[in-house]
Amino acid sequence: MDYLAQYLPILIFLFIAAGLSAAFVFLPMGVSRLTGAHNPDTEKLSEYECGFPAFEEPRSQFDVRFYLVAILFIIFDLEAAFLFPWAVSLDLTGWPGWITMMIFLGELIVGFAYAWKVGALEWE
Amino acid sequence: MDYSISLRLIAPEILLSVSGLVLLLVAAWGGQKTGRLVSILSAAALFGAGLMLFPTLHLGVVGPDTFAFGDQFRADAFAAFAKALIYLAGIGCLMVAPTYFDRLKAMKPEYPVLLLFAVLGMSIMVSASDFLTLYIGLELNSLAAYVLAAFLRNDTRSAESGLKYFVLGALASGILLYGMSLLYGFTGTTSFEGVRVALSGEMSTGMLFGLIFVLAGLAFKISAVPFHMWTPDVYEGAPTPVTTFFATAPKVAAIALTARVALDAFGTQVDAWRQVVIFAALASILVGALGAIGQQNLKRLLAYSSINNVGFILIGLAAGTVGGVGAMLVYLAIYVAMSLGSFVALLMLRDENGDALATFADISGLSAKRPALAWCLLALMFSLAGIPPLLGFFGKFVVFQAGVEADMVALAAFGIAASVIGAFYYIKFVKVMFFDDASERSVADSTTAHWVLLVVTTAIVSPLGYLVTPSLGDLTDKAASALFLLP
Image (cartoon, rainbow over all chains, first blue to last red; front, side, top):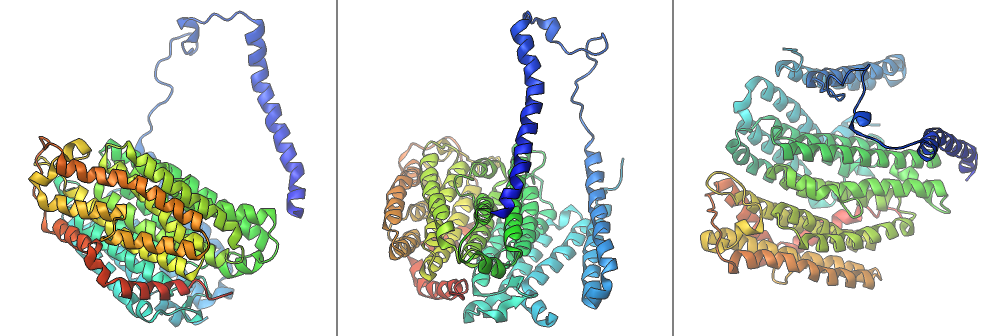
């Protein structure tokens, strides 16, 4: 219960923050709706881009290859994140720690070889 | 810590992971044409891993001898029983897949490899005795399953079901992880043993939150109501062999895992989790029975049927006794046979062009065209409905008996009443096949592998299955006792 009591101020703070930011967004909208004139038409509702009609869809499609490269990057990036703590604590973990990491690296290499062979690394 | 003992205990998992990695390389260098070969080798690996379980299962080994890596992993009789079911279901799903995917020109060697990794994840799940081992197993299983759901990637329905499964599955994993971190924060340990000790006595609000979050995350994985909404969509959209897999092996793994978490990690707070499990059981039975009534699509119908069955299985867990867990395992074994059989039958329902007969209208009058298939389906449907001479009745009988013995007469009575509602759509299946006018659609011939699986599962659910129930009961009793080592 002690933890929860300490957490309470943060929770209250969060609620106040959420309330304030919601007020900043919705208050002007509400005020302008109540005070100003409100008669939308097609021209007013169309999207606006520096005086021109919009050139293209705002949601553009992403080439799936970017995701593929990003995912492969994350895997090997995380591998490096595992290697650092392993390297500095090797005097504690000893041979079992070394062998375990080599097995892990071996499995990663198998995955890497697979990705390479099936052409996941080729851009064209 | 003696590594050689630990390594011997995880030998089935080592075999599965090494063969998975080797087959992955075979798939990469051999190309598309190795699909069938890799399937056969994967099935052989599963069979080999299953053989390794035999001594543990037969002797009912439990206790500290089964603890590997400082009690992070337990290769006891309970885990061995669940693994045996999972491996058998995996072999079944490997057998039916090549024909299905060949017809769509989509058979890739990655399918058996992914299935092998999913099975490996489940194998780790059912043996987990630490929240981190649990999470690793669960994620290994889930990540492979997301890809399997979207295996026909040019088919929008399959891709949709994969994405849906991924988004909701990631949410469930997040909930589970949040619960685990709360439990870790309040108990200072991630091992089931340590959590069990820390939870005894008065439970703080934070611990209760952690417990509920963990159970909610697991309820998603077993698709218990109120976390079932993904099931019909994913089951309908995924390729049928993958649906067969989803309805069998991961269910066994997640339910076995839930039982171990509830009775081991939360074993000193039975009243806290029992009410959650009772609610999930009642709600699953009701939603599963009522939701299926309006369905026209056969795969969606079977998805609701699996939700319904999970409810009955949870009654066994809610009892919280050795008998209850034993009954749960008996029901699980019978459920795997029934669901494997009925999904294989759905796979066999295709016309000459290879299009699936997916709705009730398509299968009307099936008995005139394919009497053998119709009679097998009749046995499976009556068994799912729990009509006496068939084995499905025995499964329901043992869980209700366990419920009554644990003083939960009202729960058992409700279950019996709701199973009558459920019987409606199973019998509708039979009525449409046998008494309605034949539809225009023809039914194509099926391969031997499909027939073998269908006949074997039908034989298991037929009264012949009662021949094995004594030894099945014996095995489940030994397995269930593994969860009740401590007072």
